[in-house]
Amino acid sequence: MTEILVLENVVKKFGKIVALNVDRLGIEEGTYNVILGPSGAGKSTMLRIVAGLDYPDSGKIFLEGKDITDKPPWERDIGFVFQNYALYPHITVYDNIAMPLRVKGLKEEEIKQRVTEVLKIMSIEEHINKYPRQLSGGQQQRVALARAIIKRPKLLLLDEPLSNLDAKVRIELRSYLKSLQRQLNITALHVTHDQSEAMAIADNLVILHDGAVEQVGSPKEVYENPKTTFVATFIGMLNVLPASAFKLTDGFDALGFRPENAEISENKVEGAIEGEVKYVEYQGDETIIYVDVENNSIRIRDRENRFFEAGKKVYIKIKKAFAFKDGKVVKVVELS
Ligand code: ADP
Image 1: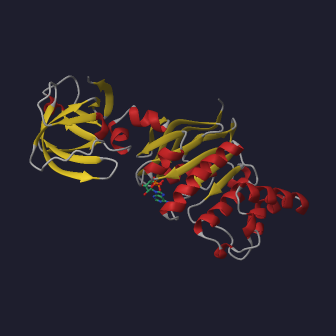
Image 2: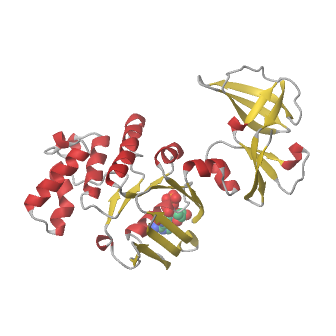
Image 3: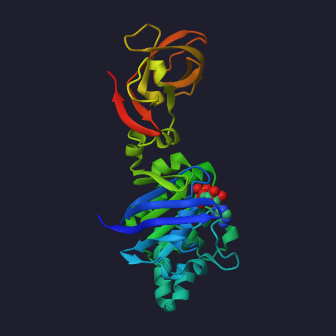
């Protein structure tokens, strides 16, 4: 696979704040990449710098091997979709989508053909003569997407594109985004703070923390093999217990395990740790059992939906855990 976008030693500061500090990040052509991280991690800064809406203090950005670091946005061959759609309210859907081609100076005939084609791909043909205010949020975002892809950019940037939509439309549009990306073989870089959105849509997650890239990998890789304590705790649910709870001092500070990677039992089991049930949350397809272990609150996911009285003594057998040392995952421990 070819890397279409590369960031090298990119640093961006705002006063004393280091908003972005990326040693190297390479994005493979034709993949859907989601930049994920807590608020303030540098996600928007990264996207703005790639778009050319902001410039790094140092470092370089390459698109298809060409240095674009100093190029203005309109010379970058990049499409951008914003959270708030950013459509022109006073012109029709057709004219909104045609705008980038008109700016480029294409003939009306070719514009008409390309707009019609994109409207069809996006299933919004019936709205062609409407104004943005006559459309729902989901429809407006499709128009914004159509406008972003009409120039067939090398890279599509999406900044929280689904955040303003209600839950049902968000889920519909995210699967649509993914299939559109596959169909057109676009390379996408999508910023979100929504984990389930990221997990659902991404070929690769780029996990940002304090401006730096902590880990890049498929959702499965990142969930099952996190490299740092931050990634392990940020992606999905994780229970963390100090090494002392295991009567082990095997070169690590703490153990982290997912709620589905432990079994709970009323009977004493070899190698299990002891705890006391705090409460039980019935969720239909599963039950989450909250247990206190030496004053640490942990959660166990039980697919059998068993019920345990509060105060009951239970035994927890951990099947898979991450061993943490100095903020890194030093070992993935599989316990039988
Ligand atoms: P995210 O998108 O992950 O929430 P941002 O990229 O917006 O993070 O911000 C990263 C850091 O840079 C934050 O600490 C933020 O306060 C700071 N920052 C971003 N833009 C500016 C700006 N224009 N002026 C000053 N500080 C900024």
